[in-house]
Amino acid sequence: MSKGYAWTVFALGFGLLLSDYMSRQVLNAVFPLLKTEWLLSDGALGSLSGVVALAVGVLTFPMSLMADRWGRVRSLLLAATMWSLATLGCAVSASYHEMFVGRLFVGIGEAAYGSVGIAVVLSIFPVTLRATLSGAFIAGGAFGSVLGVTVGGAVAQAAGWRWAFATMGIFGLVLAAVYAVVVKESRLAPRGRPSDGEDGGATPGRLRAHLPRLFSSVSAISAYVGSGLQLFIAGALLSWLPSFFNRYYHMAPAEAGGAAGAFALVIGLGMIFGGVASDRISSSAPIRKWAVAAGCSLGALLLLTLTFQLPTGTAQLTALAAGCLLSAGSAGPAAAMVANLTPASIAATAFATLTLANSLLGLAPGPAVTGMLADRFGLLGALRIVPLVAVAATTAFLIGRHWYERDLLRLTDLTVKAEPKRPSEVPS
Image (cartoon, rainbow, N blue to C red):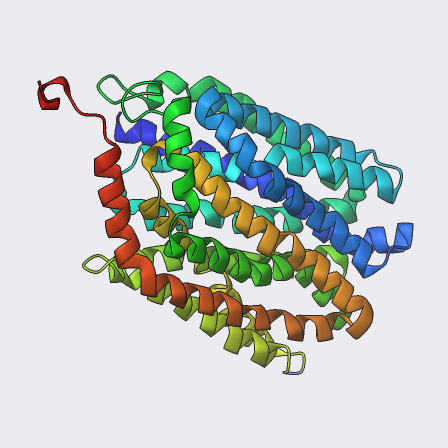
């Protein structure tokens, strides 16, 4: 495969990930409008955001397993079409309950995209770029959040919140059509490389043999748990920063969306920075990836705790930017560790497991729990509590570091034993 085509696949996959999170996060830009029009509580608003991540978490594993067997490109196209149509459905919803159903189908459409999309990308690039590409690809979620809240806020203020959803849905359908024309399953498995059904492929027998290894090591489980818990903080920030600026800095929805979008961009840059730093620091000692993940988690805890104790103003915004930069910096290292600790033949399913943890431990409860806390303690009080989750995330990363090297050696031994012998190696 040519480098040009590989980077084209990455660019289109990254674009669809932008669409994924634009459709997911546009809701946060119109929180103030929906709260006023439908008289919703913060808890109800948080549930509209959290139900997407909940659906992603529940369905990502079975749908990614299906994609490993049915075809990743076809699965990606089906997913993009579904979340785009569901976003258009949100544009015409007449009540909270109709919006909830629309958001549920957005989550169903997005369920397998992140895990399958990153599996496609990692399959066509060198192993030495795993953390960098994982961080960059996952950062597309933050960049999509930037576009979702900034463009969505601007469109909502100019033409109403319904057109904000409609814009995101139309963009996703157009991008899916381009992806269908350019990316072909046959070109992702060039001649000479094993394809599904051959040695190393994702046949049903091989899948059944490899699936237990998704949870067979302490370090793999630690990577899932640590990544998910850390994204609880990032998910809460992405969902509630527009409302934070609206309530405490007295910004209009479009202005609040733009400000929140800038900080979402910082979160995305932090993901890329974490991946690049992990690859550089761990080039001679892979175990250092765990130190990068734990360092980002601890740094976010300290900076965000400071942020929400400061009064509104320049000092608070500076501390918030630094905290956002580190809040999801562990995403790239965690994805690389999962890739190292699981067989390549079930890459999409392994990343689905990571997405499951990210959703059920972080992105789903983050917005919803923050909303419930805000109903009781106010939004500022809720944001003071949220960073404490980083204590548990750091603990998980440190446990994973302790077990990593022995788990990696055990995986290598199991893989060698599981390899089918060639005819010349079979005893006569």
